[in-house]
Length: 296
Image 1: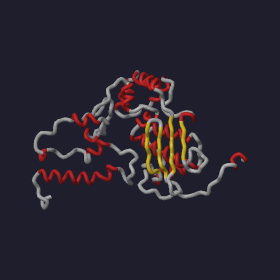
Image 2 (image 1 turned 45 degrees about the vertical axis):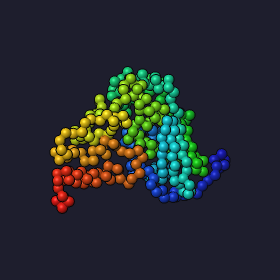
Image 3 (image 1 turned 30 degrees about the vertical axis):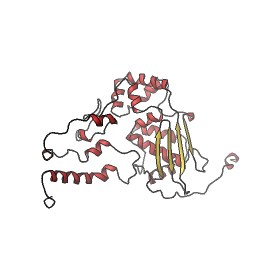
Image 4 (image 1 turned 120 degrees about the vertical axis):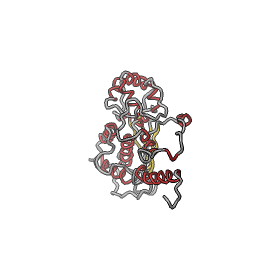
């Protein structure tokens, strides 16, 4: 008790309202629905922070995190607390060496299903076995694999501000599982090349191994991140625009682009813009058919 009494105690405080912050999509329960998001969150919860975890979840859901930047081996964020100046959060994850990534690539390449899943931007459920075979881990497992810092006066590390950023990262891993590899030091392109596969260019159909729901058209699939594909696109459709059928999926372009990283809106981007897209599409078809404003 004498040891803990040397640390300063701070009266409970309420955070200042944050404008334009990043609000978690989950307003109750767990953050992120995928198993890999759960594994990431388990690392934080293993620190047994008690009430700070609950306050971190509240911060994430209220939008107290102002911005998040993810790079190889590092996450930087600003979190609005009770003071006027936001706190600076820094999360460092130990990256794997080139030799270690080469071993991981060889272990993944031995199983065709790993390549099929990863090329479809999916995380294989037993991908950690390949990392264990390479004698490394995908997720941080030891304290020296993870370093967290915050500019707040709380002596606890991780504090509630770090916990809020951690939970938002877990949700972001649902959208883009390759962020986990990025934090460990390899981009999506590096990982695909380590499998001995060409980086997939923009294409109209799904990638090998990708499951497409029966009620979703190809146009609604996320675009593959390949800028060169923009300049090598197919020919425009033949015939007049008036003969083109209406799109099978509303706001197909938005659906292909997918969710934006760390979206700040109160509702998903697609939900906000889909009605406007539908009205614009209907009006465009009407104009192409020669209808006047008073006919529409």
